[in-house]
Length: 217
Image (cartoon, rainbow, N blue to C red; front, side, top):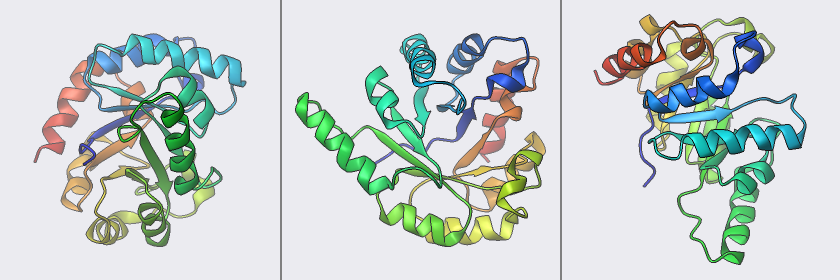
């Protein structure tokens, strides 16, 4: 059974401006964020692998699990905890088969390797679960500029429909603020995911403590 992750920090080094990303990732790991998704789509494979390796190595003594967005090859190469798939990525079932083959060749059990999927509708969520996803990010739940290409926000009613139908953990994504966490949890979400909620704060440790209070009610 996959643990119920509640807090997922999605990285965006460009939004950090001059601040370096790796220290932020390690701060998130020390603050006890559950999942850290390395989502730097513009980086070439070599640079992405170096970033992901630094994150995996730096977070190894924490409870945080590092997952790499889309690039299964990079995730496997650096020993990440999993991969997170988007709508244009390989299907979860294909990814799981690749992981099983790779781990079997090294005589390593693959059951702990996470496969997460981003979904934007109930149908996509049902399909992802059936295809073997371990957890889902559902969004955008609230209005947010970064998710405009995915259309209008889904809203809490859709979140409630998905969580009532899906048995794997669903994390709410899109326009998430501290004040919106509790409504998402009441709608059935296991937790929340986001970029700015983890990057736009003075103290990440204090932000995580605040979010923990909201996700535990």
